[in-house]
Length: 356
Image 1 (spheres, helix red, strand yellow):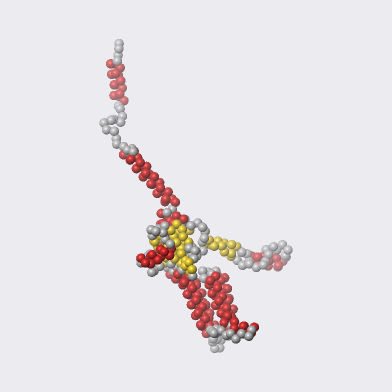
Image 2 (cartoon, one colour):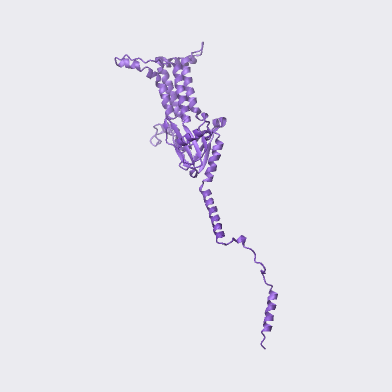
């Protein structure tokens, strides 16, 4: 069943209806899932992990290289000492850098996997530590290998990313919009009626334009898409320079300006509150916008006014009172009377009544 298929199979449609707990008679109009390319940053992080492992496992200094090249490859060789203990610090730095950039693939679960990948060399040598502090004879059944664990952790990252991506399901019915997620276990979903939507928003990145996907967000006025971010660094420098003089005073001002922080608000559309990275987004946006317009308060007020007008007309017809446009013109009756003829008639009447 493809991402855009709307229940063509009866059995699949019944299973989907049961999964979403749809009401009796509720019709499914649209079904979407996130595109593979929408989670490209996570797949890219997995590729970086593989490349780092392979580089440290296969890198060799070229012949007759410059001193700085030899120094770099010496660092690579030293990182592999102690069963890869030095390499662990390089992976920890990559984990910190990935978290610092704050992109879609820098969440908690990705950081946790990267930490495990970074500490793997230490974990594989825990038997050496146990033998040092005790009489244990335990030995790890596997040894550290750059290529093996590079492939292992990359497969873990890619597999979990694909699973997480397929856990989201977006459905539009004739009554409501449903955001459903089932990752490891069924999560709390988001659903709302069409009349709650106040705006339909779209976000499309340059990569989305290349691969034909975009994010569609239904704004229901709860500001769930507004994120607060702190811009700038911070160190322990006081802006009060009244007690300092000369160079110290200017240094204090400089560090205060460099470490000044400000809080900004930005739009952040996550997979649990939006149609995240869906293909054929134009169809979804047009459908939701049409349903929003049909179920808006203005549209319903106009429909009620029209119904009231029809009821008044029906009641008028039932009572035999035609509308003003249907009243016929009087037959055989002049609309106006000639003033001259009226005056002559009065003179004749005076002559007949002359008693003298």
